[in-house]
Length: 103
Image (cartoon, rainbow, N blue to C red; front, side):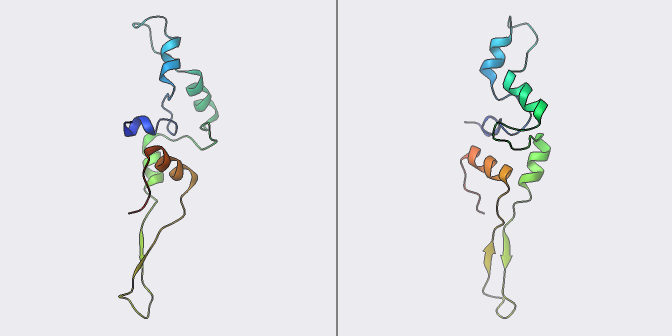
């Protein structure tokens, strides 16, 4: 599955393309949004209850996930990585992409 398609439930994009196609009377008629997409846009929430993002705000949300290198003050050569807890939208995005969020 392409990455943009995998993330379709999170941004405002229409994620139910088959239903949207069924609403069109002809191939030359203007495209119509599916009922699921209209509901998502009106409520500003996904089917899971997560806030809906534009693609730039989704990227900004994902950009806050960082790997922090930590070192005790006494022994600076003994470093370790500290990962933050994923926010719900971040967890959903990684789940939809099928990747583990470790750097």
